[in-house]
Length: 179
Image (cartoon, rainbow, N blue to C red; front, side, top):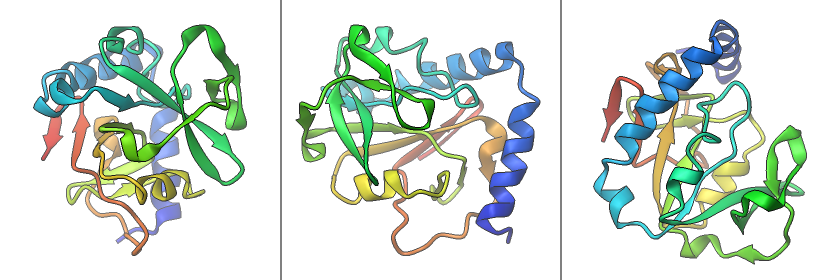
């Protein structure tokens, strides 16, 4: 089994090979599958993320999700806080991620569905993040349905999971849905 750092390094190298068109096409396939899920249909309050350039592109889909009450994470020290999405009130926050310019936090316990990025996922629905533990801390405080989304090459054989790592309920890649 590869170490977490070896997996991160390998995925970083593969992401560098993606064209803008590759990213958009993969994002389209993932969101098409996401929007067909029963859990998506039933959820009213959804936490999504504002993508970094190397991640599946959520930016293209935020406006298509407005039938839901949408929220974005905001970095606050070593935790993520939840803030309502308002396209007109986004600023560049920690790690150059666009986040809400608002401190009116929403309780994560009231979120019904969370769409989660990751460096990698495995078929047991384990998630490997960037190493700061932001999402694991957040996810440990919610019963929300958790959907990890990634490129096909980010689905690896096995991720070394620690006791504090939170599993996904579903992982979606452009060509695979792991339930």
